Structure formats: structure tokens, C-alpha cells
Image (tube, rainbow, N blue to C red; front, top):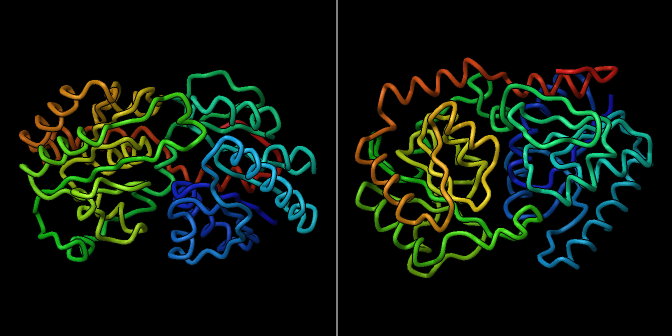
Length: 348
């Protein structure tokens, strides 16, 4: 069968990569369309995944609307030309309406509740909307849930094994403590109305604290204050999960990286004005992630200090929480492969 995948964001490249391997090994034809955003195209190249770029990230409301129109037009033409049996994406902002218009089976895999506009424009047109079972909001359309998180598509033990050689590439000695920090650009549609994140001064305060406990590596979607620029992540973006698995702590504004860290057994401090259902579950059910609002500066700084002082990464009780999570959740890639290749939609 022909499968078309729309890769809008670097996290989507990670999500679909293992499934693409399974599809190709099973004899299916895979077509990838992509958005030029952040390191998205770089990742696809590093993964060796041929793709067609159909839009470039816009940064204004008017620009985003124009980009969406361009994407939908180009995708519509591709679907009419290649006639895929099924399309899939995360968010479905283009695949759902195009799939509806061309009568092509299309699946949305999503976990972001506060992307209100995006969900309104996509969910009603999808063949199925597929979310983790911790998703709380009502879905307009056929809704299927599964016990897992997006990040388990590529970080489940069946799909990922940490490579310690990445430490040498980062200039880190085995056992040397270090923290990973993530700052986002706040330009995405689902970030509208959040009012931004950590201030530059609080970024400096965070780094100053973390440096008392080891090295600090920063990954950021946009520019950093000049005095922090030399702390940028020293490895390729495709290797970040290997480095993350050995980190003492993750702190940042990315819910995806918070979830990734928790799954890898690294304590995560997630700072966001709204929060997500999966980071809430990672805190309330598993105790692997700690959620704060940006204005709670002293609280999240204190929690970072406590985690590093207690060396929570090496705590047996903390590692037991990770094992419990993996016992209770599924191999998401196996599930995604089944959903894409099934003849008729079925519940999870």
C-alpha cells in the first residue's frame, strides 16, 4: 500500500521514523512531505529519509494562514497525483482537510489539547483522531485512544538503546554530571496566548544554579543571550536522546523533551503557562516530571536544586518509577504500524 506522512516538526520526524522502517520492511511505499521548520529537514536528512518540502515556517498570523493555504494546495495536488491509500500526521492541519476532500483515509496522531484552532480545523475531517488515553478534551470525530505517549514511539526499549559513545562526542566523561536545558521560540499556533516563557534573567539564574552541579547544555529554537550562546548542545540533533539518557536533569519549556526525559529515567522539570495532560500524568501518576508555571521562579529553581542535591537520577526508587511506566504503557510504534496498515478502522 501507499502511505503518505506529513512531517511538520522535528518531534514528528522522531515519532514516525521507526514506523517508516517497519512499513518499508513490510513492502509498503512511503512518501514523506515536510515543513522547513527548525531542524526538521536536518533530522530527515540525518535519518536518511527522502522527502518533499511543501512549505516553510511562517512567523506571523497572516504568514501562517498563507503557509497553510500553500501546504494544502500542494498536498492536494500530490494526493491527486500519487493516490495514497492512507495519510497520517501529527495535528493533521493539512492531511485532514485534504484527505476529506480527496476521500483518502487519514489518521491524526495528537496529544496537544490547547491547540484549539488547529484541532478545530482538522479533527472533524479526520478518519480517526488517535490520542494517548490521558487526553482529556472532547474530540469532534472518531476518537481512538491508547495507553502511551508519542515519545514511546521512538524511546520504548524495543526501539531505543542509549549509546554511551555520545558522551565522548559531547566532551563528557562517563559518570560526569550534566543538565540539559530547552528554551522554545513561542511562535507555534498552540503557543498563542501563553504570554511567553522564561525571561532572559531567569534563564541566567537557572544556568548559574545548574552549573554548581555540573556542566550545562542548552538547546533553543531561537537566539540565546550572548553570555549563554557557548552552552549550545554540542552533538547532532539526532543524537540528543542518547545524551539525554545520561543527563542528571532536564529543565525546560518543551513538553516533548520533558516526556522524553521521564521515559529515559532522567528527572524532568517542565515550565509552561498551561501544561499538558501527559506531563500532568507523568507527575501525578509516576513522579517522573515536575510541572511549574514560568512565574513560579523560586519554586522551579528550588526543585532543580533538590533533584540535583539528592542525585535523583541515580536513586533506585526513581528508576523503579520509570520501570513501572514502561510496564504499563505500550510500544507505540507497533500500534501506529497496525493502525496505518489495517484494512478498516478499529478501536485500540
